[in-house]
Image 1 (tube, rainbow, N blue to C red):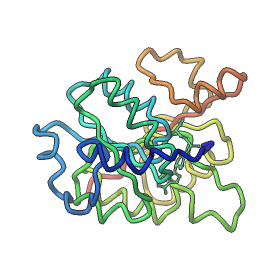
Image 2: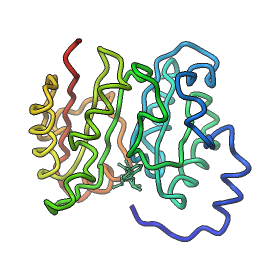
Image 3: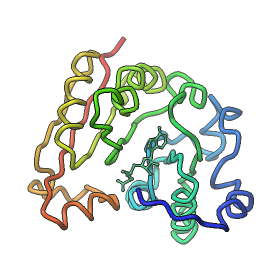
Image 4: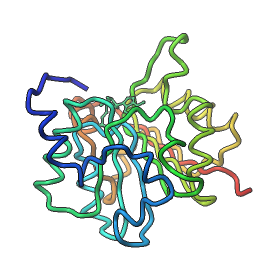
Length: 214
Ligand code: SAM
């Protein structure tokens, strides 16, 4: 994601702490109370500029959404978009998801979205991929027993890697689609990257998997 220096970003983060939650580990196990309801919580890791979250927040008002994004200059754009939407079922976390178990309690999350995650194509960077085993181990803990991971990407290498990683970890594949837009799924909410790549004629891959019930 292209990052521009935004001198107003620190002020924005300080002024919108109800939206971009500081010290999120303090809310571990209590996220529903932050939303003031018992609706399921879905998270997107690597939210970017927030188009997917706003689209999903509108489409599913009975779901609470949390977007996680490590780049400050990007998350403030997402924050502004969410404020403009006036939706109350979305929050953001300005953190690296590497230790996501510190943020969410076991079984606190119903769905994880990984949209156009950085592919890290070099073998020596495998551990940074969001579908590497160390991440899957953490997702297994924070997800409800029936919870899912949904991944979309334009990157065939990351898609194939993720399918293998899911399978080696014992996840059950519920969908694997190598040309999502050919489906014309009316419920699909496009991300910024999805719009950009599909407008250039690139294929979009999607898969959905769940951990076996304990
Ligand atoms: N999901 C958006 C989309 O589809 O338009 C953005 C995709 S962009 C390629 C990937 C984003 O993930 C970047 O904004 C990057 O900063 C963020 N990211 C990568 N690794 C992350 C991590 N470990 N924790 C939080 N965010 C991460």
